Image 1 (cartoon, one colour):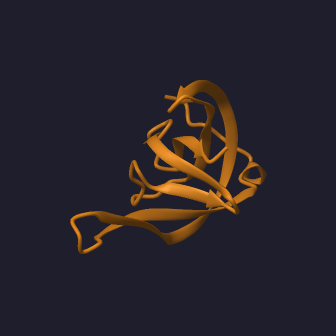
Image 2: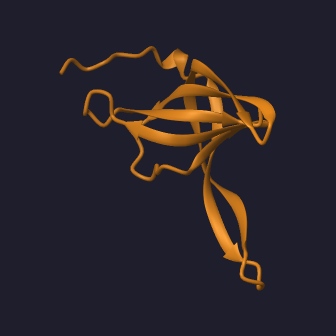
Image 3: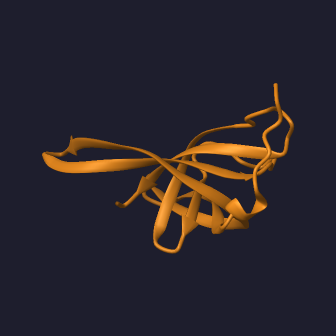
Length: 111
């Protein structure tokens, strides 16, 4: 497979990487919180918009490809944050198996 060469200047978005932390609320429920585990420079590419209905209310989801430098600690369910924007990681892959980049398939929440 041919190795991809990306211009480092394309990694222009500074994102916080957050990991989910569930703790019991003492009454059988769960309290979900997210803790920042690091910051990364990234390239954000909008991919598609999906329009749908949830609970009789119109809504939509925006999907993105987010490129970052390779890391071993990424997992599905983690998320990126850029200010008020939240990108949930659904899947990720090393596009050319060289351990230089990760491409994360993300859905933007709250839009």
